[in-house]
Image (cartoon, rainbow, N blue to C red):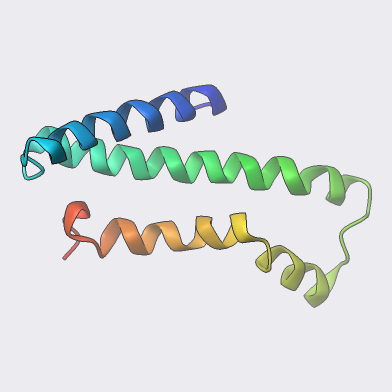
Amino acid sequence: MGGNNSHFTLLLTTFRYALAAVKFSTNTRVASVCYRLGFLSAAVTYGIVVYKAYRPRVRNGQLPGGQAGVLKVLADENVQYLCTLPFFQFFSPGGNGC
């Protein structure tokens, strides 16, 4: 799944799941697949954002090494969103993880 594909998939699955929510039919198989695929697309999208943000810094040596570098990356809100996506995927009612 490339960058443009994940953006399109995220938009399409969000629209389809919203349509199912309006029709009160979120327990269908199609809605469940759209929910999970939407989360996967969001994770890929955030991964691309994080990669594009930090790749030039690492290549140019602008990112500090060691614990300081790790803390700097973990302080980024896009990294935090990326790390919390699995929790929402597996521990939410629509994700059927519980």
